[in-house]
Length: 178
Length: 190
Image (cartoon, rainbow over the protein chains, first blue to last red):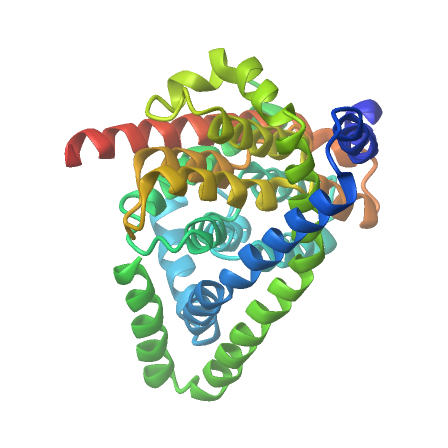
């Protein structure tokens, strides 16, 4: 487990040293090439700003008005027969919309109930199960100026839904046994 | 996206007017716009770093080599661009970063989108391979969810990493379900 935890940490310096060294051996002018690539990265990331402002404004409108709490309340009543604890519903609703938002909700649950309680475990699993779909769709398509995203968002949200369901089922098996 | 954005704004404003939450709405919206700028500023350095490294990998032939190695696995998922080494190399680098949880996932992902866009021309409409890459990235299959594990450790968990197995399985299922949905949607729209 400790090895896995550090895998990303080890891979990072290997890439950072290995790639320029390999390029240098191949006769690539390393400094100039790096700078040109960095310049391109700068253009790409600044190009996503209008798209990110649009989606962030939309999401904060939805959240700040209290509409998000309303939806998660309604969803709670719909999902009660499945046996999903109501405390974690805000995570399910917030996770695809805002990564920092759902991490905040998860943090709150872990703090109140403890990270090693069954509720804390479920909250952690749901938080880690998927990535922030709205953000990924916005920034990936925004970077290349695609405005008609077709079925990208619905497909991502269906993926999220199955990810949550799987996380929930695994949690039930861990806590209550098969 | 048009419908989603309009629903977010319209329902938010409607709820605010009905419940009298207009003041929090105003400050939340301005905060949102500000946070978008803050996010981009925070990403500039990471994008420059990985943009530079990617360019080096590209010009030294590493990206092409990566594309050839991963083709048997990723080729079937990207049938329309599988012969394009520049695209498949960038796509592979993105997916590997995702799985390892490296900070390079978004910079390399956007690079891969740009490579796909190059063969696509000036259209504003998403094509099949772009959606495939977005679905895989959004599902976020990762062997080690460092954010939530760090949070658990900070709050005194005795076994913070216990969630890594379950989240990896859930992420894998999310990826597969998203890809199945993508292929069904594609068939319907022809």
